[in-house]
Amino acid sequence: MGLIITPIYAALLGLVFVVLSLRTIHIRRKNKIAVGDGSHSQLQRAMRVHANFAEYTPIAIILVGFVESLKYNTIIIHILLSTFLLGRIVHAYGMSRINEDFRFRVFGMIMTFNLITVSSALIIFKSLMGI
Picture (spheres, helix red, strand yellow):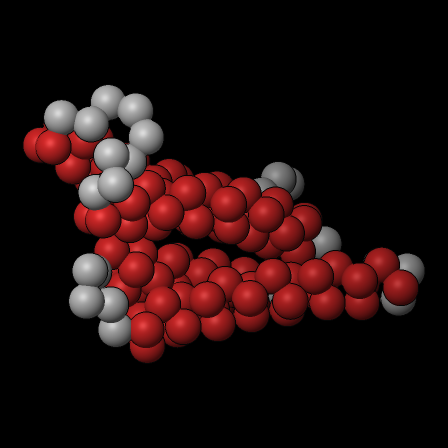
């Protein structure tokens, strides 16, 4: 049987990506900035939040997809992906604020790095143990 859990979280993360995209588009339209950031700090932040999400989410989904395909316990998969989803939302919230509270951003990055590290370790462990 194929992946069951990872696609659900990938879809939820896809919806978050759309929200971040629409937020960036809204700021662009409101400020009449078609290309670039126009040195507009709110747009710069929206663009970086969107880009940061786009940079980390694919590798996270790929790694957890491999973990799931290696038949790890479903609870592990849910823990990895739910903390990643929460971390990305909290990170986006924190990073979006002009008067940023770095605790949100740091929490999000810790959750992201934890997912990447733990998933990588689980994959390496199973591979070295000969599955």
